[in-house]
Length: 256
Image 1 (spheres, rainbow, N blue to C red):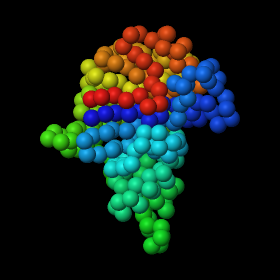
Image 2: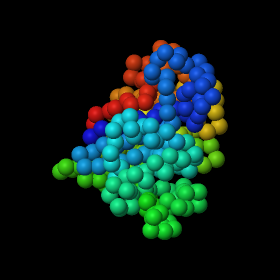
Image 3: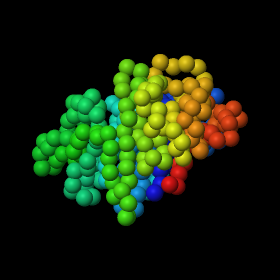
Image 4: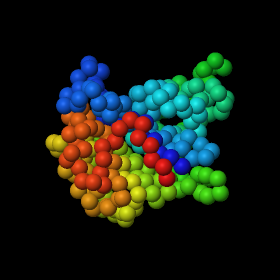
């Protein structure tokens, strides 16, 4: 099983659409960041976490020719507005793709992208089927069952869902508070992939100081910082990190 960080950039990516790199050195490819999406690859399935506006580019880069399921963390545009790029996978199979979201995100998706979930004509059928995001999801991978647990965290004015995969890896791309009642699920993982927007405080994201304090509290074998803005140059950020923490980059692949 593999986990691929398809994109690790904040809501405008790096560089921004106007070409602005901020503090990031444009000569370093690891400073080119598309918006956040992740992919769980099992022996049978490709499971997408979030459909960023850069999804088409991400899928082509990794030669991903099938998507079996999609988990949405929350309703924000940088996690959902690549949803139309899932249409080719319906055309290949002629089966609606199951997507999973919480109540608020489901309402937003059905309202904003109604044409995707409702058939308007023979030429434009519904391509996706929306399902309730459960607390525990089981997926068969060869002879074992893979468990994916979703946990709500605070992300500014909305709730976001993070995902803990097989008790080995946690993916928390957008967060400013983890509830203490859930701490037990995050301790002693192999990998903790966590939001780290920039150096200053932010009302809906962890900054570097907070991200490092969370990693120190939960003690994963490896911490990986994601949702990185143009403020954070890859090389300069890496210099500030302890040995068990690294910045993410697009395409970073974890073998599990």
